[in-house]
Amino acid sequence: MPLTPRQAQVLIAAADGAPLSEVARRLDTTRPQIAARLSEAYRRLDVTYLPRDERRQEAVRVARKRGLIPTPQTTKEAA
Image (tube, rainbow, N blue to C red):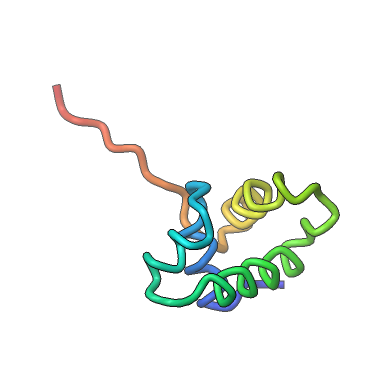
């Protein structure tokens, strides 16, 4: 099942492992709203069975693999 646009936005913002309060600040919302969107995304990506400390990383990996969120681009500077 695909992510909603807001779930994808929150997952992208949280992909670097920042605390939920920091992600909420970045997206100008509340920590409970971020937690709710991530929980919904975890269910849709079927990663809720994982230990809590592994869910976000796996959700990001699965979402990127399925093309639901972009993969960060590495920039190469010309020599």
